[in-house]
Image (cartoon, rainbow, N blue to C red):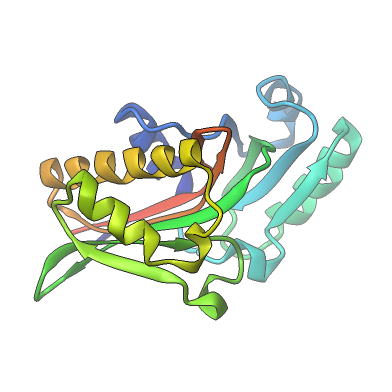
Length: 202
């Protein structure tokens, strides 16, 4: 099993044509100024580390950072977190948060899950599952089974359908993907953007 952290996972998905949030990885303070040119203000700073899965639980996410001096302070705090190997600067975007996950099971192979995203996913337990490969009609049914889909605008629903279909096709070409967590997927005005992702390969 090989764990792929956020930086590498998002690069992989971006290369495969998925819409991934604009970001910049920084391992040292000397690169912060350059990193700020790559993202819009206000921006988000997140701890990066191979073994850091739940960033929010370790205080590894800093929202609404607006200045260079603020970024320097927050960078020092994030680098002190156990397992940190750098900090990810990301543009901040608004919209509804969703979760898309993949899990390879012994019985069914690769299974895709869709539901409510954000930091309290485990409490909500609002997720629907399907065995891959998926077609458009099955994806629509899958989305409708969730509470979070209520009130979903048509363009946003279509954006979610498209990304799940694209993911299903990706899994056919990459059977070695045993786990993939996209949380959150932020959707607004018919655009679905991957903001955080991690992956495990066989």
